[in-house]
Image 1 (cartoon, rainbow, N blue to C red):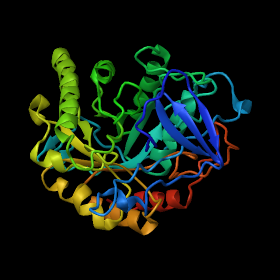
Image 2: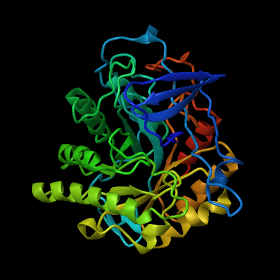
Image 3: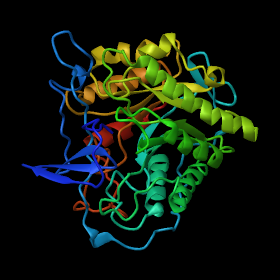
Image 4: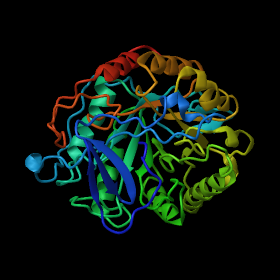
Length: 410
C-alpha cells in the first residue's frame, strides 16, 4: 500500500472531507479514501514517473485506497469456523525450508522456487473489517480461494495495526493484543495445510516504523515476537516493513540499510537462541516506496552472514523501468516482487510483461491485491462498502488476467 504522506499526526484521529476525498489519519499515517473506493494516483504522469528525472521534482507515492468506515450492518460475532478446502488444490509438494543460493531462492530439494501469488489481508482487511468483531474464518476462506481455485503457491499476509482506535473495534498490534496474534497464527497454520504453499508475513501498516517507513527498535520488538511465534514453521517467510519512502537521491541509503540490517539481526538472534533454521527474510527497497534495490547490489545485508535474505521491490511502472527495478538487481540478488498491478500508467499489457519477465528470471511475484476495495483490486466489490465476509470472490478484469496467468504452467 502507498501511504499518501510521510507526516505523522498528533494524538487522536482526524477526518477531513475535501470534495469527494476523505483523508483518514490511521495510526499516524495519512491514508486517502475515495467515496467510490477507487484509486487516486498522485503521481505526475503515472507510475513510471516514480523514477527521478533531472527536470522534475520527485513524485509522491502511489496510494492504494483503503475503505472509509464500512456499514456496521454486517457486524456480528467473531467467525471462527474454518472453511473446508477444495480437493482441487495444487499437487502435493514438499513445503520445507527455503534457502538462498546466489541470486536464487531454492526449494528443499535444490530446485529454484517458482513462486507466484497475491497479497492477502489479515482480519483488519485493509481497514474494511476493523469496525466489527474480527472474522478470521473469512480470511481462511480467501486463502482457500486463492490457493485452491486461483492456484497460487505464494501469498503475502499483510498485517495491519494502528496507533489510535479512531472508532475501530480492533486495531492494536499483536504485541499488546494476544487475540490478534492468535488470529495471525490461525491464518498461518491454515496456509500450512496447503502442500507447497508459502506465506510471507509482512508488517504492512505498522505504527512503530519511522515517518519514511523504516524499522525502529519498536519494530524489532514486534519481529522478535513473530520470530518466536513462527520459529518452527518452514512455510513462513518474513517481510520487514511495507515501503520505505522518498530517498530518490539515495542519500539515505546507508541509514535505511542499517535499520534493515539491525532488524534482520534481531530475527537471527531469536532463531539462533531457539536453534531453528533461518527463515527467508525480505528487506524492502531503500526508497521510492520500496522500488529501489540498487544499493543492495553493492551493499547486501550482512546480518546472519547475509544468508537467506531476499530483496523485495514493489513495481508499478512501465517496462522501460523493469531493468533498474528488478532485472539488474536479480543478476546478483534473490529478488521478490512484493507488489504490482495496473493503474496510473501501468497497463494490463505491462503487468503481463512483468509476469513474463519474472518467470523467465525465476523471480517470485505477488499481485496486489486479493481484496475488493484496496485498489488495484483482484476482486469485484459487491459489498456496499461493508466488510465483505461471505461475498462472492469474483475477479475484476485485472483479477481475471492474473487468474488466467496462474492457470498456465510455470
